[in-house]
Image 1 (cartoon, helix red, strand yellow):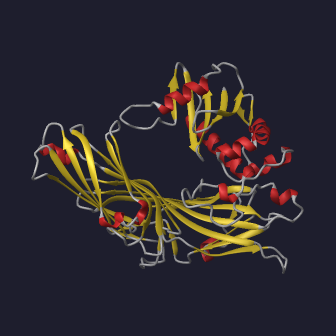
Image 2 (image 1 turned 45 degrees about the horizontal axis):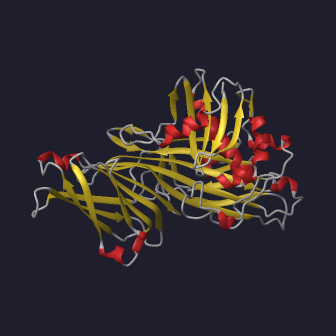
Image 3 (image 1 turned 45 degrees about the vertical axis):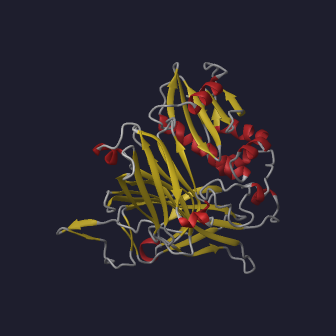
Length: 454
C-alpha cells in the first residue's frame, strides 16, 4: 500500500502531490530530495529504494523529474517501481513527453489520471488505453523545439516532426490529426573487457517499442530479419542454432517474449509479428542475446611512472569507435575511478580536440575520486586520446597501476543496432486505398554496463 505519491522537479520543487493514508510526514518530499542529493556512500548515487526513519522511499528518475512513492508498509519494491515506471509512461502517452514543463502545464489532467491509477494507496489501473474513457481534460502540448530529447533518444533530439503527441489526438480530432506510427528497436548492451582488450562477457537486452497514433486501431504487421534464429542448444561441444545454420549474417537471440496482443501465426515461417496495437507506448517484443557481437567502442590504457617526477603518474587513454563513419554516438562519458593516492589531475586532450572535434571536455570530481572525459558527439572510425598527469600524495608504487579503474563508458548511438536485428517492413492492414499514414522505424543502442579493466 502506498502512502504518498509525488513528482519533484530537478530543483526539488513539488509539482504533483497525493497523500493517500496520512501516515507519512508532509515534509517527506524535502527529506527525500535532501537524501538523494547528499547521498555519499562510496561516491555512488542513491539506490531506487531506501529507508529514512521508518519510511521507505521508492523512486525513478525520468525526463529530469523524480517520480516518488512513500510507504510504511512492507510492500514489494519491484511492484512499486514498476508502477512508477508505468505512471511515467502514462504521462508520456497523454502529454507527449515527460518533463518538468509538461507536468506543470498538464497538472490538472495528471491529477485526473492519478486518481484513476491509484485508489486509497492501491494500484487500480495503469493501462493508457483503458484510462481514456475516464479523462475529460485536454492535454497542453509542448512545441517540438522545446524538447531536449528525453526518452529513448536522449541528447539527439526527438526525431521526426510531430512525435510529441497525445494518444487523445486520434480519438478527439475527428480524423484531422496526423496519422503516424513509430517502431523503435532499442538495445542496451553490457560488455566487460579484460586489461588486454579481450571481451570477457557480453549481452544485449533489447525491445521493439511501438507508439501508435492511428485512428481506428488498425492491425499492423512488423516483419523482422528472415534469418532470425531464437534459442540455442549445446551439442558435441559446439553451439547449434535451430535449423538455420550459423552464417555470418544470421541474427541470433537467446530468448524473447511478446506483448499479449501479438499473433505469432506468421512468426515461425515468415518472422512477422501481427497485432492490433493498443493506445500508448508499449513493447511488442523483449529479447536477450549473449551471442558475441562487435562492441561499438574499444578502449586502451597505459599507466606509467612519470620519468621526470616520482610523485606523478602518466595515464594514456585511447577511445576507438568501431562503427561506420556515417553514424555518431552522442553523450559519450568515459569515467575513470582513481585511487586515494591521487591528489589532483591535469589532462591534455588530443590534437583533434583543438579543432573542436567531438566537443570534448574533462572533469576531475575530487569528492567521488573519479575523472570524467566527456564528448558531445563522436563520429565512427575517429580515434580520440587523453593524456592524464596524476599527482600522487605518497609517490609511485606498484599498487598504483592496479588501483586505477575499471573504466566505465556511457553512450547513446542512434540508428545503430548491435544485434543487427532489423524491421524489413512495417505494414498497416487497413482496407483503404488512400490511407497512407506516416511510418517511422528507428534504431538506438545505449550502454547498460560497459566496463574496461585497466
